[in-house]
Amino acid sequence: MKAHVFAFAVAGLGVAIFKLLHLPLPWLLGPIFACLIASLAGVPMRGNKVVNDAMRSILGVAVGSTFTVTLLVSMAGMWPTLLMIPVMTGCIGVLGLIYFQRLWGFDFATSYYSAMPGGLQDMLVFGEEAGGDVRALALIHATRVMVIVVALPFLLTWVWDADLSNPPGAPAATIAYSQLALMVFCGLAGWQLAKRAGMFGASILGPLLLAAILALAGILQHRPPAEAIWAAQFFIGMGVGCKYAGITTAEIRTDVTAGLGFCVLLLVLTVIFAETIHLAGLAPPLETILAFAPGGQAELTVLALIVGADMAFVVSHHVLRIFVVILGAPLFARLFKHLETRKET
Image (tube, rainbow, N blue to C red; front, top):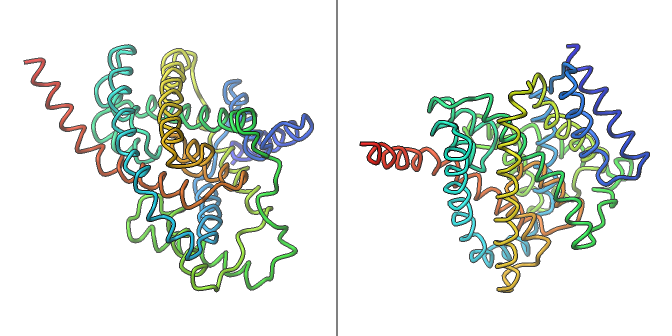
């Protein structure tokens, strides 16, 4: 209990400092930096999985409520860039496997599942079943998410002059109680139904689908208020920073440093793919960066909401990436392992 209170207090301090210094995204980046620094200083902290999942359901409702018939029809024209997601995922996997195994000496399972740009929980489960180092996997993926999420706001501001100070929604006081109740229903019912169906990313995708259905039917007419989106940013940021709790010097020297080097590879690949898509005239640069950046789905959804990006474009590409990784990762792991065994013999 004390670890949860410490985490909440430190995250709140991070928000206050970021607001005082007028730094971008105080509700997201403030908790990330504050909890990261506190974790490295040895402060015992822990996030709350149930609360974090509940916050993710807010983002699911926020995205689903933006769907219109026009937006849905426009998704049919996304196939050229959607086809590039499996290509980029394959490039990341191959380069990451070579990087972690040859340069850092991790075993095959740890190297392979560290390289896969999927959800943290899924990669930990797959990696553990394959005999990988779960702690190393957790730190490497936490570093990937943190670096991408921290770097992108500054890139969006410097390169594309994106306004990150926009409120992510209308104040709660201006939205009808019936609409607010409908959002709560979409969040809770969508999350639990998706969870029972065994859907990956149930806490986001379940509410997203249910909210989208109600929005297309004209029943849900607002997205969650600004206060709810800020709360989601706060707890998601706190969760990212708290993943470094209890870290040792040896883990910083190996796991975190390896993760930072991998992030450089990821950012270079993202820029290459985004520039190719932009030069081919397939999509606007801002949406492309947000759609192809291999960070956390929830964190990038927050950024897309704040800058006013095309939510259908961004979310559909991230959903496909996670889908490709979850279905393809175990299959290709067996193939790579088989090829590696043949080389050794």
